[in-house]
Picture 1 (cartoon, rainbow, N blue to C red):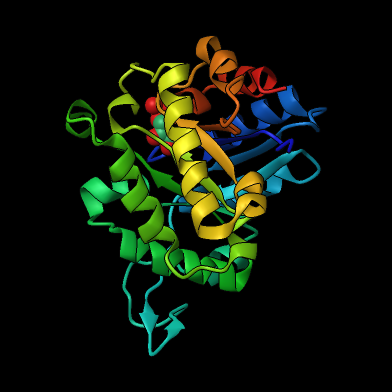
Picture 2 (picture 1 turned 30 degrees about the vertical axis):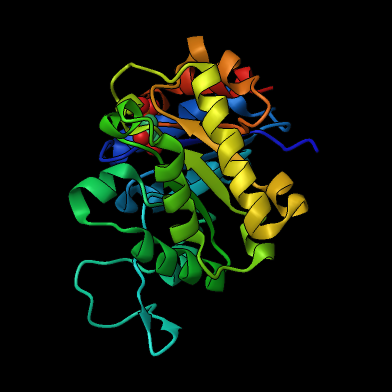
Length: 259
Ligand code: 13P
């Protein structure tokens, strides 16, 4: 089954308002006519309104980098006494469509666990937001030969108990931690192997038809010069781009490489 490629930019903790406006304006010009690749940018929360205005009438969709929710009395919390947090309902209200969840930087610096990610995904589903769920192994784990089991635990933990029809519309991003921001990209064969493994887990959990629909992005030093080869792999359905998404031309070149 043909899955539409999906390239998303994770701006991380970058861009003041004017820079965000320039970046998205520049990108919009370069990708204005692209229809055969899905495109999203995920600015910091404070730039979401700025970017939202500028993606109107363009093929660029709006994403966020995190959302907060916990499950309380069987319900997803969308408001209340949680100082400093932003809920999926608030993001939906702000025009967001996609939310990155479980990024390794959140796991590393902010104590994000698979169980927490699971509650956040559930809350996103409730308000109609689509998650980009990040998984990936540390370098030590790859060296120990346990990449597949690490990723399997993450996928199963993040998706535990979630409904098949929602999972089918979700995205999983395989981001080997050792490849993020290091310039050391996974080889296309290394990435494809893990992507195929993730899809095989989805087959077990949800059946072939759902597994065939889920798009699995690769993330970790994807650049214009390595994107084409990575995106040519059977189970690589797009990219989650950090550094290269901060330059309109580089990000656009990756999008064009996905065509
Ligand atoms: P880089 O593209 O900078 O390696 O970052 C990847 C990433 O973490 C995207 O979420």
